[in-house]
Image (tube, rainbow, N blue to C red; front, side, top):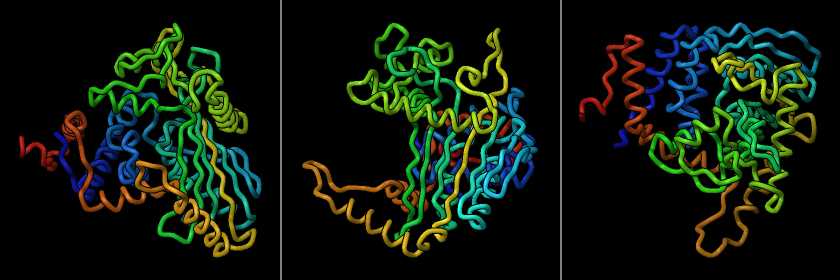
Length: 370
């Protein structure tokens, strides 16, 4: 049974859980904002359901640090390379994009590459930071191997999302945040929590056959006997080579610029199968629209493009056309009043996290209803 929690309560709880696990207060606020921004925009695969398994468990396992002692190891007027020292990916990434925006405001463009980092949440969070400042934002990250190269069954590339955002004259920016695989590992995790199968054709086993059992897929992705299909699917007939190519672009920009780890080096496992630090890489770019023909001109034309696209002839059986970022905006317009829906699996994790953190003051609505 899904129970809805008020946003203020969830934010307070998540923030205190992060701090109880050693994350400094200001950093905890950043981590909380990034995490719950995913739920607010409808990207539930990267929201509250990942608090325990992706962040708290990894801190407790010692494979990422709760303190983010990031440092710039190289810098020019328009670029920088940051070492996150295996701290919280959200914290390093927030500061990296802030630096990129500051450089863009002074020189027109700014780019920051980050190495030795950890899972940074949704890429769109950082590109929308740039859009809010009148900039075009770009970001991407590599990840543990999940995608098979075209004509292979071995997972080599991460789901490697690439995000773009820019301001418009509408109430929300254009915001595209997409993995370079058809389906993300997080979506498989969410389907497994719900007891649902994964759609056929999105995951391939080492024997070349499609896999659909979500639980089996998660195990097989870890031991390397399954791989996600790149955007376009398996083979070349539907353009799978395009997704494979874009995933490779993200891999290179997330590693080569900063002398970081890549491909199989990001498995998170040592030769004996023990868990080790991921050492992920990210990149962030901000382009100031004022350096071209000005922000207002950019926003007006960008908005006109969005409106013309949405005014295109609608396909039979469909209600309307959307542009990137619009559904997320509409989701927040709905969820800001209804609260965050939490399923039974996540409810159990929240109780476990509360008890472990000693947050006895928190009594969740689903407990009283039980």
